[in-house]
Image (tube, rainbow, N blue to C red; front, side):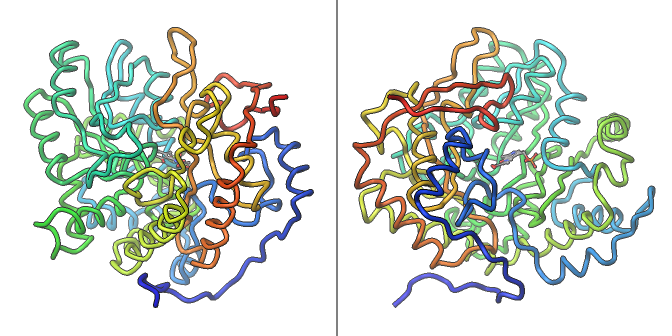
Length: 458
Ligand code: PLI
């Protein structure tokens, strides 16, 4: 008998997906320069590229679109969004943005001065790019274990307080405008941060006058792990946990395309009056009026409703169970994956999968390309290509984690789809020795993983 929760929703609308042949997929992959970002969606059977903006919205959210108030200023949907954000997250101000990186742009621009340091629990691509663009150095202060794919810890996203203290001692608190604490940590495998750690980080930062800014993108997944793994929270609701988490931050950036269950949208939250004033002046330049910030009224409505739906226990329990279901199938066949399984994806360990390849032959990139050819499943490289180059030396960053992310969109695929994914990965694993590396033949300067192109090595 099954030992996983069935879907807590039923299907009202369907979207047919492409059924392709292996020959077609080989041609599509070649045309896309062996970069899964450059495939057309119509060439993909199961799309696990990302969980960002790929959510299936609920009937209530679609109904919400119809009550979009598209006034240029003072839209009622902004008022609704503000009310929901205050109620569920507890922050004083919210500035809508077109997506998460819009909020990162505002936050980095108003808070960073050249020469500053921004510590964080592992980097995220766009987040670090905005920090560096404003003259800061990103410093990774996540616990060491997060860089090892095989260490199984309940809160592998935690900040190492000694690393934080050391940075403060070395550069001085006045050169650390804020700490960026991601809940959960995407590139570590979707790993959560404990409530205890958040509390301790806040205490240490308060002592030194450093602000704590959350990257709240997957905060609901983090709340679920706290309920499951931190005994004192086992009887608390997801909503209560979320609110307490946010009480340890001075603000947050949010990509609404993940845990707010929408296809587009994001926001910046701030408690400080003066910082809010600065953000609301800047948002006019980059996004729009502070009361819509790059979003249509209808999008703000869908996001407000999505926030209320996201804290439903059965929704989030099912989401995490889907990740575990896929992971268990892969592990049973000996496929190396990141442990423990996080909240939004299963990550293949490409180093262990393809031990015969050097990191500069791009094992994760080639694994993602081969998985598509094998099964029509689109995944994403999260290794040396995503990590980019050192801004000073120009050398490749060489992250310890060389991963392929199988990201599960919210409320989109069934367990049968995941069976197909598992079968594709396992087939590839059986013929892993035949897989050769890639040469990079085109490399853009910024965020190269999106558009770089490759050719198979001879
Ligand atoms: O894609 P945006 O601009 O809405 O959000 C940027 C962003 C910020 N933080 C984190 C942790 C993210 O995961 C994130 C976007 N992630 C994408 C697109 C992903 O595929 O994971």
